[in-house]
Length: 132
Image (cartoon, rainbow, N blue to C red; front, top):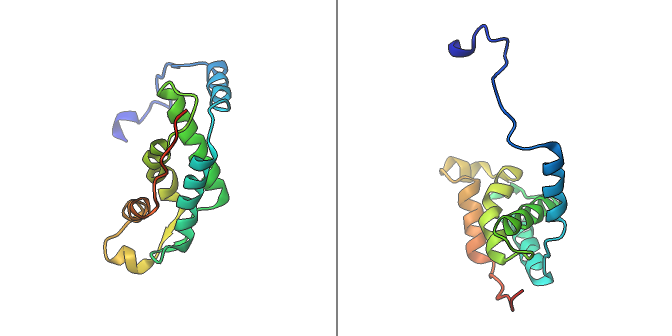
């Protein structure tokens, strides 16, 4: 705080991209395919957050959409035009963790959303994808 006192709250920041490039990247994600089997896997993970005994409030339908978009973005960054179950699995924790409310008893035992999402990922069967 002391370092920024007197700067008027401004920082010297240079843009790394333009608004047009961001819009183009968002548009490119729209073209990344999510196969039905992968979508069902994603939805089963989200549904499990609503049924888990250590979760007071599970992830919402909007959380499902956020996880799908994140998985599409990951696939695009990896140079693919299709989402793999591994994309969903890798992003479930970061995408859903802050969207659930952990039961107080689990919190008191030191468990957090990352632990519980990990448990869910261990129990939901990963589909075997036939390929792109």
